[in-house]
Amino acid sequence: GNSVTQMEGPVTLSEEAFLTINCTYTATGYPSLFWYVQYPGEGLQLLLKATKADDKGSNKGFEATYRKETTSFHLEKGSVQVSDSAVYFCALFPGSTLTFGKGTMLLVSP
Amino acid sequence: NAGVTQTPKFQVLKTGQSMTLQCAQDMNHNSMYWYRQDPGMGLRLIYYSASEGTTDKGEVPNGYNVSRLNKREFSLRLESAAPSQTSVYFCASSEGADRWSRIQPQHFGDGTRLSIL
Image (cartoon, rainbow over all chains, first blue to last red):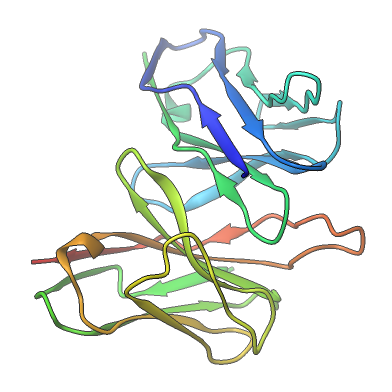
């Protein structure tokens, strides 16, 4: 079946630190891959996406590259801010619906 | 821009009571979804509607029913609420798949926090 595995959190960083949140997936075919972000008390918002191998999605300083050879879609940011504190979800679409990972909480301190 | 609107935002029910969660989108999207979010479980799909007039079960449909009232609205009903259904419920919508069958991003509402005593 289809599945997404994310690193467990919380990930705690100081402001301006480098961020990596790991995401690996299992799927048949060529899924589209997404990162969503959820701020406290809100719904999920699309952060970035990639639809084919070697695509790089980017938005608001975040990047993720679709690596088919390692079945990964790791999220990175060069310098995090306090306002980036949120829960991040990796998701894939191999068929008719999205499959989400369990989410990784990021806490950034000043 | 309203996007996806869910009502109510909070609700407390007693075991055995029934309730309908409402969801409406103003983006003319074809597909709509209901998820529940529980600690440590991520989001799990309850039901979805790929297009107006169709509904399909997701990963955790037991204890729920849905109605795609029209293109804008997709409601979720709990006929006899149970404590295990205490959760945060999210509605989402998307354009569906493009002509290359690639799913378009989903847009989420702010959620309904439901407690069942």
